[in-house]
Amino acid sequence: MSTVLYYIIPFAIVLGVLITFHEFGHFIIAKLFNVKVLKFSLGFGPKVIGKKLGETEYIISAFPLGGYVKMLGEDNDDDITLEEEGRSFSAQSPLKRIAIAAAGPTFNFILAFLLFLGIYSISGYTAMTAEIGQVRVNSPADKAKIMKGDTIEYIEGNKINEWMDIKKFVENNAGNDLDVVINRGGKRIKVTVCPEEEVVKNIFGEDIKSALIGIVASGNISKYKLNPFQALVKATEKTWEITSLTVITIIKLFQGVVPLETLGGPIMIGQLTGDIARENLGYLFPFMALISINLAILNLLPVPVLDGGMIVFFLIEMVIKKPVSLKKRELAQKIGFFLLILLMVIVFYNDIIRILTNH
Image (tube, rainbow, N blue to C red; front, top):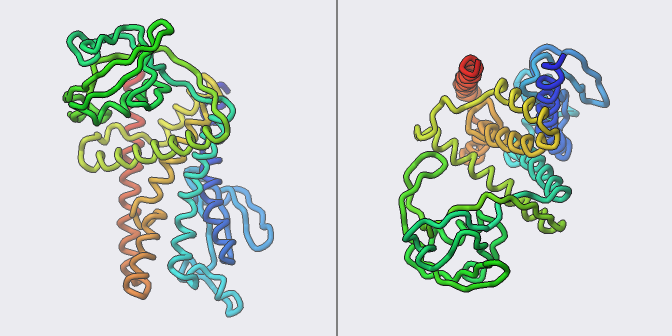
């Protein structure tokens, strides 16, 4: 019972919300363009339960790792009456079909943004303060007489609210004198610091050049309350930060910088969801936002069985002024399906190895 309570139920809720939001994106934009939606399914495979409301059948299917919206004219074998021909998916312009295909991932981005907005509006956010815990000997900070316990308040007139702000205003200023205002025991002191370029490791373990001043954070954490506008800005920044980091990670994966062994699948997500739920249910919301962004980007990859692959076909159609031939689409979809299965095998293998290793 504890396993069901702490792992399966939170995972099912998180996955259900993400899939529902994704498929609702396709659904609502299709409806906006007056495309007839035949089925709205959470999950794949055989129907478990379903109910028809209006012209759409709403279904929960056997395999919960996904979902789909079935529109009239999406398949070549659909029986389309003359009266409904204008409401078929295939009858829409390429731009409308692109909008419908892109709506699912877009709604996942929107969900992530709304989750972050809610979190920041209600709870604010926590971050490391700009208090210095250590100054390296003979570093630029040491030469500027900056001391342990000082708090950096301004760099070149820019307000420093948290530790990460320091990096933002220092990392691209190697060799440039910077005016820095520090707070030492309640007294403000202005100093000049000249950052030095050094080779450091980035989050992917690569050697990069960055300007440093030779300080280490004290590790003190502070909670910051935000007004509605600040929460809006912070939610936008966070959504963009995770999106760009995810895209870069995928690029690094293809470059071989990030090993395939780091990929995780449903088992790992289920474990993390359960662990997070056991620690604090409130932590599920930022985790859900993170997974929602990853789901959006995964679906935008130019793989034929994914939304991104459909968008590529429609873009090609706009260029060549006619649909991609059925034979070419079927071949591409077979390749895409193979790649998707291969990815699933890899992530399931990685998940199982992690379980065996941890035990």
